[in-house]
Length: 152
Image (tube, rainbow, N blue to C red; front, side, top):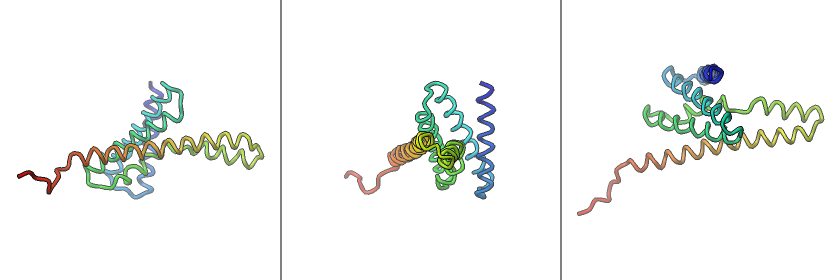
């Protein structure tokens, strides 16, 4: 459990570093960092319980997407302001590097295997963000009062 906490803090720190790089304001940086750290915690918990990289990335990305959409609504900012930085800990950078290193060294079968895993993870992240964004937009639209449909 302590390892999960340490990794969560590192993920929040990495997210904060990217908010600085993207010139995000202080409060939005805090929210994005919190979202990135908690997203990584969801990833670790799901990976520990299921052992599936696909499920862990899908659910963690969906979690980050939900937090980002809610934050965007609360603070009247675009959701991408939070998503872009908060999703950084989930990006499979090491697998991308391993894919390219295998391809360059001539190990084509390993390159294809790792490359397919990388694409699967990237797809899971994209699907998680798309799903959460769609669900949140539907939920937010249900709360809006409908004008012009009054009964007489």
